Image 1 (cartoon, rainbow, N blue to C red):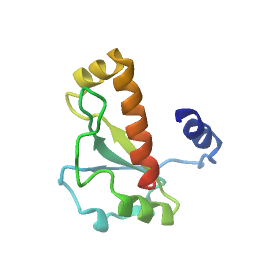
Image 2: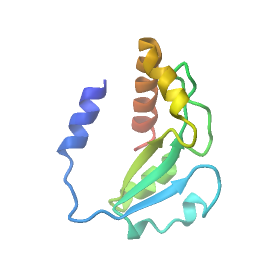
Image 3: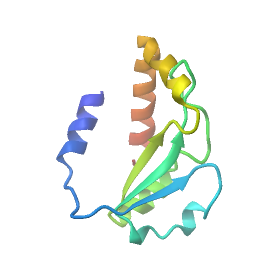
Length: 117
């Protein structure tokens, strides 16, 4: 499942310059509808968090299909940022168990693809 995603990313055209914006999912800063996406080439939406069993923590703010759709409409590449503050112990637990790692990779891929990232 991951290989086709990586191949698609590798084949995308690289812009001459990158202007990366960062949008936190926890509510500080402007609302997604108020972002000036026209000034960016990429938008990092942070943070998609996980549990130690590889499942994603529920969060109504991320992933955000409308934000990804609006970004793509302006030729801005929306990116899902993974983890966040103090996420290292969670990632260590995920990679220590093959089933958790498989679950995590599939959950992230599904969240990204089904929401337009």
